Length: 176
Image (tube, rainbow, N blue to C red; front, side, top):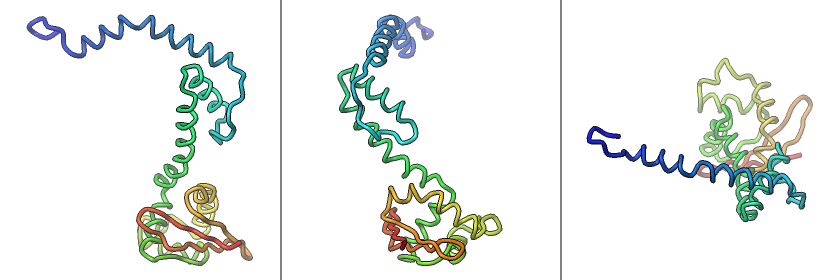
């Protein structure tokens, strides 16, 4: 309450929550009970890392009468994983910037590293060619989901061929 004794907006909201808490918790319990009892098939590949969670999420959506929305949301989240990972990676943003400026690149990680150091001098003395190569290979699955790409091995490493990158996108084609 405020000084004049009137209920504030926060107090009104709290009162509404308290008045509806029991029915809300009952609704949640009933929905979860229905989802847990559901043994009908669920579309595959909705979450690569936690497929069991995705199945349960679809069953919760089904229990709420919103199966299609649950499936759509899971598919969108799966697609966004690679984008989010690459945006938050410490190397991928510099790679994207370099390719946008250079229009493309073909070579090894050792040949790519000086270009990335030009983009972000924080890599100097912190990132080796071997480290860059390993990081690119570990990111490759995410790069493939975002951009057309492949790679080919040479004696002791990889040769990467990245084609022109346009505003915010990396188009990579690596020869096998």
